[in-house]
Image (cartoon, rainbow, N blue to C red; front, side):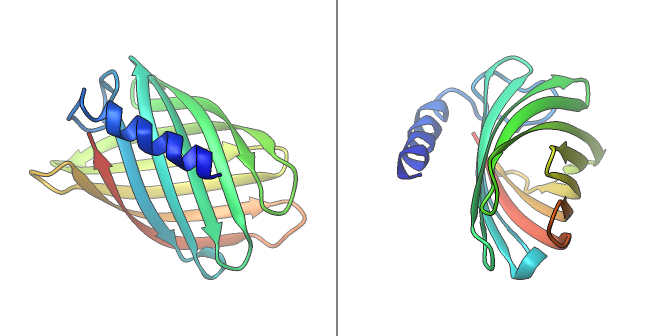
Amino acid sequence: MKKLLFAAAVLTVFSGAYSAQALIPGVPVLETEVGYGYNGAKDGIHSAHIEISPVSKVIVGAEYRHWNHGGNETDIYAKYKLGHVYLGLGNRNYYDRDAKVYGLLEGRTNVIGPLDAYGGLKLSSQEREYKVGLRLGLVPTSFDLDVNYTYYDRDKTSSEDGFGVGLNYHF
């Protein structure tokens, strides 16, 4: 895990030298987003993510989650942009079961000015994860504020849901 975090940090530093626009429609090459989030599901989930666009319309990313009363999970994924919709595949390393491949569908649209709305669905043989939220660009900075609701419907365990808040940085 330390190697993964180190690699993400190195990629963040080097990719930041090439781009300074947000991950919104268009997705410039080498665009990068890093962020931290907290969700109230299962008494708290801390998460950190990084997303990089290595080529036009393609995003690769990783997310690390720590469930306060569960364990640690890691997602590695890639998604392709079609208009306002992203289609993708990923692999989730669960804290309580074997890793599973999942499909994802996400959408994002501008509501007004610096406010975007988004929604997403991840499906695997072990769970369905639903997420909706709002992202507010903190003008004139490269930061945005994320407020969301996530519902985790996992097999062989109780479903979890919660409201979350996050802060993202684009470069």
